[in-house]
Each structure stands twice: as C-alpha cells, then as structure tokens.
Amino acid sequence: MTVTRRASGSIYGLAYGDALGAPTEFLTMKQIHRRYGAGGPREPERTPALVTDDTQMALAVAEALLDALANPPFTPDLVTPMWRRRFVDWLRSPDNNRAPGATCLRAVEGLAAGVPWARATQAGSKGCGANMRVTPVGLAPGLTDEQRAGAAQLQAAMTHGHPTALAASELTAFAVWWLREGMEPGGLPAALRDRCRSQRAVYHARWLGDLWQRPGMDAPETFIARGWDECLAVLDRLDAALARPRREIDPCELTGGGWVAEEAFATGLLCFLYFPDDAVGAIRRGAASSGDSDSIACLAGAFAGARLGMDAWPPEWADRIEYADRLGRVGTAWD
Image (cartoon, rainbow, N blue to C red; front, side):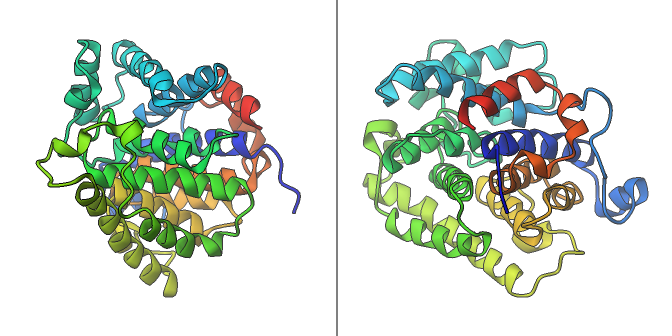
C-alpha cells in the first residue's frame, strides 16, 4: 500500500471527525439511531461542514508550532508565548461559539490577563481539551522524543494541569507520530504500554517548571506517575475491548465516554483500531457514540489519517470542511 500525504490525512481527518461527531454530542444512542440510522452520520452536515473548538484549538497549536519550528532551536521558551498568543486569539475570536470547554475558557482567560500559565492552568482538570488538540505535535517533523513529549505535555498543561491530561496528551502525540512513521496498528497498544512504563518517573521540568507543586505532591515523580498509572488502567480496558471486538456497540461502554483525557484517547484509538483500513468507518464509529462524540471522532480521524494518508478520505470533503485553507497549510508544510 502506497501512502502519501499522511500529515494532511491526519489534520484533515481530525477536522472531519470533529464535524461528523459535533451533531451527535450530547445525544443518546437511541437518539442517534433514530436520527441517522444504526451506523450514525454518514458524512459531515452542511457546506461548509462546521467544526468545534477541537479543530479550532488544534489549528492554534499547529500554527504556533509552524512559527516556532521556523525559528530554531525549538525550546519551551520559544513556543510558550506563541501558544499563549494563539490560545488568546482563539478565546477572542467570533468563531469561538461552539460550546467550548469551561476549563479551556477559564485557563485562557487567565493567559489573556497576563497570568503565568502555571497559575492560569486548571490544576485539577484532566478534561479531553488537553489532548483533542495535540495531534500537530505528533505530526511535526524533526523533533526529538524529548521535545515531542515535552511539547505535548506543555500544550496540555497550559490549560489542564492534571498529570493524566499530560500523560494522555503525550500518548496521543506519539500514537500519531508512530502511525505516520509506518507502525502497524496492531503494534500500537503494546508500544503505548511500554511508553507508559518507561516514562512513569520522568518529569519534564524544562517544559513544565514547578507545575507538580500545585496539587501539593511530595515530588515531581509522584505527580507524573499518577497520570501514567491512569493511562495504563485505560489501556487495560482497550486491550479487553480489542480481545473481544464488538464493533456494533457504543464504544463508550468499553473504554469510557471521552470527557476526560485518557478516555478520549482510548476510545478514539479503539474506533480507529476497529477500522484500521477504513478511515470513514473509524470516524463514523466515533460519531455514533454516547459520549464526547466530536472529540472521540476527531482523534479517531487523526489516527486514521496518519496511517492511511489523505487519499483515505472522500476527495469532495476537502472543499467542504471549515478552515480548509488553514488545514491545507498545516498539512502541506508537514507532508
């Protein structure tokens, strides 16, 4: 199988999943089936197909990364003010009317007021807003593992200060990167589990500063280990779901509703792993779910596109999706 334009496939896939899942968020499975049939929505609604804050904030992360990588070396001191500015621009945008998460709003309001990010962040929150936007960190070429891990955790920590938000964001970014680099889907769960274990006591102080002190932990290693342990626990649920595939049922019953970071990661990944060669099938499964459908489907789309490339998506969708010009710039830069 010849695969091209994996970066475009992933960033557009994120947006396609977001648009497909947006109308089903907050609906029960009965309501979804009544409105769309047993398989859920088949294609994004409207033209343009509207996305949510998931895609908006992913673009903020991506565009700041593009700026940062054009001015090496890539360091936290370089990218942090760039992310702050992009997040504040998102906060003030008239398009910020897609039911954004309260955690992101509160934290970015603090950033807009000039509060240092480690005080503006919501220390107890591990909401999925931490990792629904991290895909660009997984797509950006030329990063060391330390840079990719630190950047993934930092962009999460600027709004969601809980250690599980950081760990789940790192896993999401590395899953995207590994798929882009050609890892077979069947190898992902074991690779992710190994990552959890190897990083359990690794605190990226250069990127996170003294964030670990906010919850009153006794050491940075104790702080971050909590996040990796919760991710390992959700990977246990993922493995159990994959051992006895039940593609016809609500994936949220198996790996969680996706409202928190580790469940959004695991459930989005489950939808992809159920349909590793069918990108549209993966996001349809994510959209036809009882939980945070747009975030689940957007992550499933990011994983699917990173593996299968841009040609896996219906070509007519590219002209219909909101922010197509910005998505195209990111994808072209990193293809």
